[in-house]
Each structure stands twice: as C-alpha cells, then as structure tokens.
Length: 594
Image 1 (tube, rainbow, N blue to C red):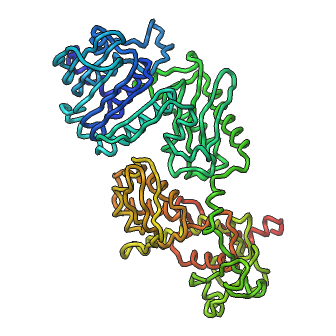
Image 2 (cartoon, helix red, strand yellow):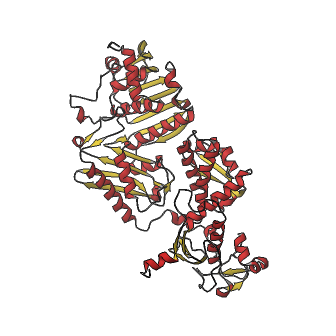
Image 3 (cartoon, helix red, strand yellow):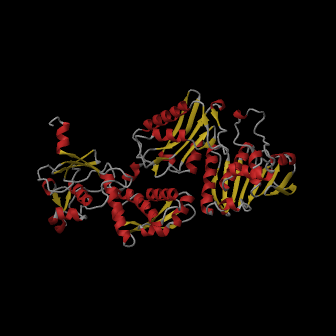
C-alpha cells in the first residue's frame, strides 16, 4: 500500500477522536478555553445530556473576527507566547479543541472584545456555512449541536442522555473546584441544576460535593520542599462505597493520576476498610519545571520529575491532618440517636429480673431469633425482660455442646466473638459474619418473590447528587424487589417509604448513597440477577451488626447457630473470612507442649 497525505477533514476527525470522546469531553475543552480567556463567570447550557446541545458562554476577553478565524485553524493557539511548550500553564490549546469539535458537529462561534462589535462564524462538520455580526455582551459564546450526527460509528457508542449528562456534570464540578474564584452555572433541558458563586476553596468543594463536608471535612494546607498541598478530605467515618468523589488537581488542572490516587489511599490505609473510600479534593502546586502535563492528549495525566516527593507530601500531609483531627467522628451523631440505643440481655443468674415497665433502662429485651428462643424457652414464653449494664460474657461453667462453632465464651475488642468448641477455639468477626447472614436471608426471601419491607411511619427525604438520583430512579423496580421502596422527590432528592425488613434499623441516607454508588459502578453490563445480588450485598452491610457493639451471650450464640445452618457463612460479602479456628493441637504448639 502506498503512502499518501491525509485530507484536512480526515485529519480533523482523527484529532477529534483524541480529545472529543463524548459531550463531556467537548464541554471540558470549551470551559477550559473560557477560563484561559480570563472569565469571571461561565454559563453552560445542555440539552439531552449534551447530545443535542452544548453551549458555553463566558465574560472573558473575547476575540476579534481575525482571531476567531485563526482559532478555527489547526495548530493555532493563544496559550504559547513562545516555543517553550513545557512551560505552558494554561488549560489547553484553543486552536486544537475548536477545529476538532467543529469537524464532528455543527459549531457556532460568537465573540466580542470590549469596546468592539461582536462577530459570528458558523461551521457544519468543518465547513464554514456563514459569518456576520452578532449581538452579545463582551466575551465568547460557543454552541455545539448534533455531536457526531454525521459520524454514526462514533454516535452509536455514546450512552444515554442521563449517563452523558452525569459525565458533563462531573466535568463541570472538577473545573469549578479548580477555579473557586469563578462563578459557574449549569442548565440542563431548561432547568438550573448547578449554580455556585466565587468563594473560598473548601466552601466551593462542600457546595459541589456534600454540604456535610462543612462538619465532617478536614482542611489541608501544608508545604514541603517547594511543593504546596491544599484541599479538603473527609473524616474516615464519613466515607463512600466507591471512589467517585475523589478529585485531584495539579497546578489547578483536574487530573486522574495513579500516583496521587495511591497516595490518598495510603494515607487512609489503617483507617478505612478496603471497600470504603474517602471524599477528597486535593490541590497540588508544583513548579512548572517539575511536572510534564503533555503526556496525554486530553491533559488528564501528568508526569512528575520527583514522584516520591509528591507522594510523601500527600501521605504525610493527610496523615498529619487526620492525626490532628483526633477523636472527631461523623458517626457520633448517628450513634447518639435515641433509636440506636438498645438494652442487652443476660442470663437470669446475672441480672435483676423485672418487666419493661419496671426496668430503669426503659426498654425490655425480646428474644426474637429462633435460636435465642430455643436457648431460653421459659423467658420467651413468659415475655419476661432482663436488664444488663453492659455485660460481655457469662462465666464459662456450662458444658461445651456439640456445635461445630462451639458456645460463646466472650467478646474481644467489641468486635470478635470467642467461642469454645469440642476440638478447639473459634474466633468470629461479628460484623463480617452477620453481614453474610443478612445477605443470605435476603437472597432466600427474594428467590421466592419480593423481600419483606418495613414501612416507615414518616417517609424520609434523602438528598443526593442528581446523577445518583437518576440511577436510583431507573432501578426503582429492582430495589422494590429487595424491599427498598423509593420514589423521586425533586431533582436532587429521593423519598424513602420502606426499607428491607431483614436490615432492621439502618442509616437510610448512607444506605441510599452506597446503593447509588454500587449502581454507578455496575453500569448496565450485568444481568438483572447479578445487579440485584451486588445491591443486596451493599444493603446487607448496612443491616449487619457493626464492629464496636457489645453483644450479649445470647446474641453471640444465636449468631453462631445461624452461621452453622447458613450457606457461604465462612466468608463475608467481600470475600474475607468470617471465622477462624485454632485446634487444640495448634494451641498446644503455641505454648510448646508439642
């Protein structure tokens, strides 16, 4: 095959493939151009998630008609005053983005310099269709319509309008965090979905991610060896089920860098479970000579001259801030709710007998699990209640029954159940074990129909990001099959009417947040059964006995008996073991008896 020169239209389409993958890619390029033009306010309009319309209007410096024509040519830019490409500090190259976008869509470029008249140029898939005067305030307006309409091979790979809108919203949030001094507004299908005014960095992050970061966030500001790290991170107890709210910036440029993500994970290594993730917005300022931003066409990846120094700055700075936070915990408010207080049962020999009306604790204990009722039939039959201050175990005087997991003898660190079996010592992780039991209950019930639900006396309104609400809304029927009854309650809220009965009392906002995150991670590639299974596992985690809760011996033994008859109870929903056994021979070896 002979070598030939490619036509300019094909070159532009190839370039578009490098920087314009979807509407969010085009939107990102246009907003970056506005910021580089010195805009103090950026207004965005979308239609059908950007598939039909992407419009960006700014109040920046504007362009003359001659500069507008030059900006629509390839390899023309205002970002490089000289040939030192490694010293570029702007977001991107206007002369790269505009012709690439114009080659795969209908583009209208309008601009006006202060003190001059406005001008308009219209292009249709790279061909100039007309130009002339335009009426607009000082600044620039770019309108992109019908992205990939004439490129069906690219159009068919775009996702639904909701999914494309979620990607556009994420792109706007990243740039709005990078430039808290600029006002942003976003309208989607005629409805205002985002509006932020110039503010301080932490305030802007909280407004865009979660208003609770004002209470549950930690400010970061540290300097080391000429590197500066600022931002906001969440308390370890204020976390999410996926890492979708971690935003990283280098010299105010949004990036997705494995080094930075790894450093963030390392800072929380001893504070979070492996399947939980913090919320974070971190801003790293590095001398331009110490970082290469030209390693990716979309400028989303960077390369540091001294990556170890950057990693050390992040890990050290975050660990210091987390250590300084001390005992602060977002969970304190949840545990302080009256509904969370429970009275623990103990045996009659160790308790003061009474009734619910007579007890000073105010609430009686009921043996609701079959194993508990079987262990104390007379108490369950008579409905008597017993009150315990905070007992951890009974005296180990009863003979060891022939149960595979033995009989409970105590609890260690309010997390691990210690049981004595005929052939050794059993240690059970109470949270991991109960998580699996709740999941198997939900699976068993849902196999024959819908999971039983517990209606809420007063429906609870939970505020979430609009994309999370969209994901939950599309899965209403699936969630109903699992006992979670919800309905949309405005653009950014969901009304919860019932929760799965096997979960008991649970943190409803946390449950919905994690379910939405699970749906976002699963996408639509999995079958309905698999999707339900994953979501059920997320729900089960919220309904399980948490580490840190003191259990009575009756509760411990009930847990052990249910584990013995429940399939897959040897590992939790995340694959970790729920119990380990030390045989008598193993214990003897530890003490040198063998």
